[in-house]
Structures are given as structure tokens and as C-alpha cells.
Length: 250
Length: 250
DNA sequence: GTCCACTGGTTCGCATAGCGGACCGAGAGA
DNA sequence: TCTCTCGGTCCGCTATGCGAACCAGTGGAC
Image (tube, rainbow over the protein chains, first blue to last red):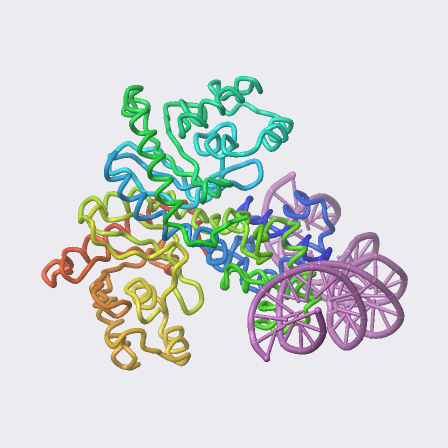
């Protein structure tokens, strides 16, 4: 259905460029003005986007948020994970993230904040490459060799100078993660941020999500990473068993 | 654009009924099977929904989450609000909610959890009627009389036995809220939960969002509500001035 | 084993939905 | 005043997507 595809493209373009006008949209999408205009009208009528009062520019509507937030409830993931996340967060005093794999990325769907004044701030919906985040690596390590190869074939771009970009080094790292049961990320996503993560694998099968503890380098000391890793691993397993039986997401 | 409208309906129906099959969808929507099937295929191709591996049932995809989460960033609302929310949460030790008005409801878009073991749990994306939540009442009190009349004309259904359903009582309550600068909700949403809220009004104009403190009745004691109300009011004002200039949402 | 009531998925001719180039009025600079 | 761009609209042609009918697989009930 062509019109649906274009409308979804328009919706996404609006979401990315937040308050944006008709002409700018047509330029970024390379579509005829009237097509975009029609899509906008339809999306607006359905409540997915809204027009700012004064400027006439478009932004995503609240309906999109409501529908999107259904993702984190999917398969009973959030209710199963939140209590564990809170316990974990309270225990270690750092921020706990719940991320879900999506294609070549992981997406942050739930968060329990550290009570500490300094913390790594990542908004819900934030994304990261599979090879460049602790959550991503934890997920990647739980996939088959073929899938890992396919991922690597897609290219390993560097996010920070610490990001792993060498295929062999990544494969070695993934082997280590499989053995240990958790992944460590030292400033590979963001300078000064260290995190440990473990995949959530119902029935030891495909990873449907992952849990991580992240905090500033100054508090995430090297000698703490292994005990923290053990803790996330156990937490991720606890979530996996707490999941409803038919929770085979994806 | 008919096909787009139906596709969006399908998307929404999938989101609401989470893992749902084709036939069930056609029944809930009252649309021909092939139409729904085509919509599903298109939505899936665009990554907005996914099919569970075994059951063949559909659920919303991560892309929907990513696009939807753009709402809370809109107009710089979340970045402006989060620090204040954290300070407020740390100060009073209760859960702080940021909600955005949408039609006849308010929608929860951001949350800072109470560190206490007992807390009111509301998932992001949760909604509440304008007359039956503290956030909703705070927003309602900042609207014009005409808008309030229009809202009341739409009906005031009871959520709990404590919900205000009498138009005159609601109007009186709204006057009180306007004077005090904050709204109180005593178990009108949920039994045992008390909350205080204040609207976020850039330039003292239309409310674009609202902030609330909520907790169990046992901790939200009557003598605390006024000081807490003062605190949310100040916090909401702080957010309003922290907002970027052109943040006229909606 | 044999139904039957389900499921998800596909086909195809017809009408209509929607594509998109051209056009319009309104502001905003120059 | 002229001009550039803005958001928005028109309208004829045609591709698009509608939907009744049709498959094929599945799992109880008897």
C-alpha cells in the first residue's frame, strides 16, 4: 500500500525533525508537496500529529506516544522487569536500563534512575548500535554465529575512540561475554560512562531484551564490574523466569 | 486517504490488544480480512509492527516506540522538566509525574520514581480523565470557561467513588485550584493514592503539561498537602520558564 | 478417522482513491 | 512593488488498493 508507506515515512520524518513545516518536509523526503500535504492531513485527522498553533509547523501527537508505549508492556516485559530493576537499582545505587533489540540497534524502553546526583542521562527511546553498547553486546553474544556474521557484515562504525570496530576483536569479546554471562562497556558509547549488561533470554533461547547498570567511570570502578556483572546476570535471569510463558517477543 | 486511516486503525488496535491474530483483528475492527491483512503487511514492512515467531500473532514494533517517544521531547519539554522533577522527587521522597493533555485526557510522559519501597506504579503512556486526576484538574483549571463547559458537556464519569461527577462541584473545585495554584486529588483516581499537581503554563498562557507528586494515603498526610502543593507549583513555574521560547505545544 | 470450525494467507477484476504537476493567496524581505 | 517562499488547493488520469471469494493448514469434537 503505497499511500500508507509514504504516510508512515512522513510521520517518522515529523518525529525526527520535530517542529517542521510542509516545505521542509517535502525537501527532506523528496516527495511532491501535495502528497506530503495529504499525508499530513490524514495523520492529523487521526491524531498522530498536531500542528503548532502559531507557526503552522507539525509535531508528533500524543496518540503516537500512547501507541508506542505499548511496546514496553509487550509480552509482559515491563511488569516482569520493573520490580527486579528497582531492587537492582537500589542495591547498587546506579541507573538501571532495560533495552530491547530492534534490527541493528537496541532501544531504551525503561529506566530506573540512580539516586546519586551525577548520573548518565538517556531519554527513553534512545538507541545504540549492537556492537557499541553493553546491552547490545549482551544481546549479540546470545545470537547465533550466522546472525553475528550478518551483523558484522553490515559494518562496525566507531561511536567513540573506544568502540570496538575490529570484527575479530568483537568476536573474541562476544565469546568472553558468553562465558561470563554479562557484557562490559567502558566508554564505548559515551566518554566517562561505564556499564555492565546481561541479556534476558526466556528458556535460555533468543534474547528478547537486556538489562544494564551504568554509571560514571569514577564510581564504576574496575573491581566493582565483576560483582555488578554477576548481579545483572542474576537479575536478567530472574526477569526471564518472571516472564509470562508465551512471551516469545519477535 | 482511506487506506492510511484504516492502517492507523489497525496499528492502534494491535497496540491495544497486544498479541492479536488476524481474525480477531478483523472482528474487532469490522473490516474485511484482506484489508486488514494488507494493512498488517504494510505496517510490518515499515517496521511498525512485528509478528511473533510461533503464534503468528501481531504486536507493535520498536519503531512505534521510538517515534512515540519523540512526543516527550517535543518543544524541549522533557529536558526542561527532568532536572526539576528529580530535585522535587528527591526533596519530597515521592513519585513525580509529568503529564501532557490530549483531548479529554492527560497522558503520562515522564516519571521520576520515589525511592520508597511502596509507591504508586503507573506505566508511561498511562492515561486519566481530566476531571479525575490531579494533573487533569490542574490543566482544566487553567482553561477558559468555555472549554471547561465543553469538557463537562462531554460527561463526568466516575472512576472511583471519590471522583467528582457533579458539574457545579467541579467548577467550584477548579476555582479553588486557580486561586491556590495547585490541585489535590484524594483517591479520585485510585483507592489509597493521593496526589497534588500544578499546570505548566509558559507565559501564564495555555497549559502545555502538568507536574504532580503522588504517593500512598499513609504518607501523603493532610498537613503535607499544602506545602507539597506549593512545591509542585513552584516546580511547574520553574519548568515553564526553563522551556525554550517557541515551545507553544499544540 | 472424518468431520467442521477455525486459523492465517492469497487471488483478481472493478471502481475509485490518491498521485502529482499546476495553480492560488498570503506574508516576508529586498 | 517585485519576488521568493510559505501553506494549501484543484483536477484529470491511472495505478492502487478494495473486498468477496477462494486456498491450505490445524486442532478439537465426536
